[in-house]
Image 1 (cartoon, rainbow, N blue to C red):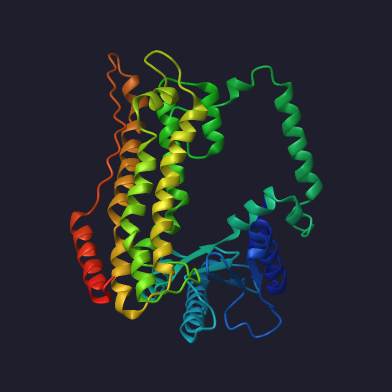
Image 2 (cartoon, rainbow, N blue to C red):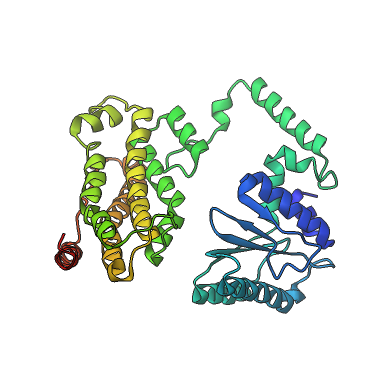
Length: 387
């Protein structure tokens, strides 16, 4: 019986809570705050500080079957509504909510719970038995706490046997599938670099961009909802408008530094001149520089929103933060365009008479209307303050 099946058979709530806490502490360390399950927890079974995420955990006291959909719905909606109440009371700052369970979530229940979370402004998700099995499989320290969930020695021995077989195999590369797509993780990136199929340089570049974009999706969602992490900086009108006035120059500086990676000689160092292989380290650096600039733009907007201004200039601060929208969208569109175009390359190269052209042009623009509105408001406030 595999690990996932064993997790699904847990019917003692205290055991499941202990598993949840062990897994989350292994994943997040001191950032995760476990909540005493022996007391009334008001639906709070743990809290992740950095993400402002509340957890609710549940397992049934009997083996699962398909007739429990209504009970799953009642439990999930009940705990989510408790989280909403805790947030509205000001007890906890909750932006995200995760339901931990050892059973699958029915699609109909999933739609309803997601809709309720969306309406309350809380990002909802859930982690089932597959998640716990995956962490137990790779985290030895967690596995050792639960000897009843598949023998630890058996797992370690299987790993050892696998390594021995690999070391004895005369043709390890023959067993490794050829990666001729945009890699989906770091392991596939390493395989792509090792195998070096045609146009591998562009497949690697698209992968670095796409994985970087995926990593920053939570920051992008925060930006779109207007969220900014509180920084503890407080301004009066003069200092606030002085801070905001430099916003456009800050944005230009971020974009300008990013565009420094696009000269022809820099791209040639990464992708190589015609007929010459590229340099994987330079490709990863080039893609990483674009992603770090994208993250810097999102952080820039978050920093502005996270500072406290007098009511009279809060609107100006938000106008400043909104100037990040167009540059961020331009970078996201570029990443999507590169992924789309590069994904077609392997099939095109397989044609009898292949002809492939790849353009890596990134154009970052400013929203002229937003800039004009921001400039007008800054001037109006400065005139009023006689600055």
